[in-house]
Amino acid sequence: MVFSSLVFLYGFLPLCLLLYLMSGSIKTRNTILLIFSLAFYAWGEPVWIILMLITGILVYTAGLGIDKYRNNSVRSRLFLIITVLSSLTSLVVFKYSSFIISNINMLPFANIPVPSFSLPIGISFYTFQALTYAIDLYRGKTQVQKSLPSFMLYISLFPQLIAGPIVRYSDIADQIADRKLTIEGFSTGIHRFLIGLGKKVLLANHAGEIVSQTIGTRLEFLSSTEAWIGIIAFSLQIYFDFSGYSDMAIGLGHMFGFSFKENFNYPYISSSITDFWRRWHISLSTFFRDYLYIPLGGNRHNHIRNMFIVWALTGLWHGASWNFVFWGLYFFFLLTIEKLFLLQVLAKLPRVFSHFYTLISVIFGWVFFYFTGVQDILIMFKKLFFADNQAYDIRAELLLQNEILFLAAAILLSTPILSHLFEAKANMNRVRNWHPLRSILAIAFNTAILFFCTAALAGSSFNPFLYFRF
Image 1 (spheres, rainbow, N blue to C red):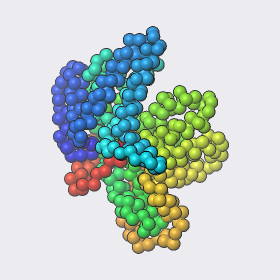
Image 2 (cartoon, one colour):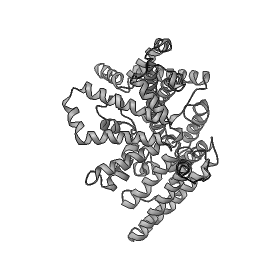
Image 3 (cartoon, rainbow, N blue to C red):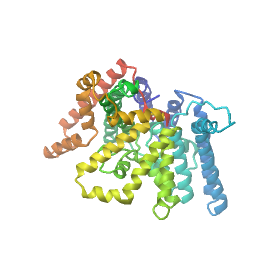
Image 4 (cartoon, rainbow, N blue to C red):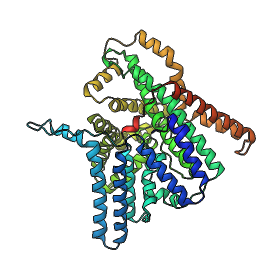
């Protein structure tokens, strides 16, 4: 089940909210959330709920051991090692075993049967969340959770289960134990959820249709103009798809009394790749920083080696394919030259140049992300650099005529310009949150988004979810 489905919007969520709001105690509400979270995960492939439960129980038990032997560094460290190895082993087996064995089979005389698993939904997210709990507990940065149902709620909480953001246990431990629902928080959650739903259904899905019509078809027959339209559309699709799901997760969290950290901050207005990765998928960037880069030595020693490891693994986290490794190493190269000298150069240039450099670099990076085959990547770059004889054709002209307004609107909406304008107007008119007119306009806006999203979902079966495989 995904958030952008009619079953979730008009069945699962209303029923969950009804039962949740009718219950009084925090224990009952947590039980309802846990049951609905497990049902949400089991909706698509019920068998994989067993893997998530095993992971949760194992990490919970190891956490008790880490806490019990806190004064015995050897035993405490042993429980941590068992937790990390078992969690990562599960991730490697189910997500990367086919990739690893396929590469081994390229060696002479190697002929190992390649396993075929359907990827457990959200395994990368809940595995990383389990690791943050065990590591932070070992470091003394959080308290042990002695209630198994409460810990399983943290692991399986459906608002952020399948697409993040990666939530650290230390950030919501107190909220699991006690949280308060307010009308203001609930209404903020509804608005944030519908903003994310609009991003996904109205923007990401339409951008995805453009992608399918261009770089998703026979690439070698595209004109260079179509290739540019296609990769720009993909840049918009992946942003609105993933940031939309993050918005929906944060909004759902507010509805149930939780507060999740932001995961995106208008990454396409960045003035460097360093700045971009402070704004894009923030929870993943900070995870690798705090749990891998700094323990490896951070900036203190061998920082280039440390960055190489982090970005190779960042690429692999996104998928078991060499193109994702290339994508990660591509950003490693850019971040390295920025760290060595380029940031100083960019700081002296007008912002328009640094912004253009960042956008072009990110767009080129999405080529590695989108295409799994090296040959397709090479063809695509050839198209982008106008290295063939077909720069423009009638298909590109028709595509531009049909989609130029959508692309312009989507580009504008990927920036904070409109939100800043609305905020400035509200301040100028001294409109407060309690003002009746503001409330009426907010209700009308939210209703319009829900109406158009419902119509779009009912009228089309095209509803891809790019981060479903992670």
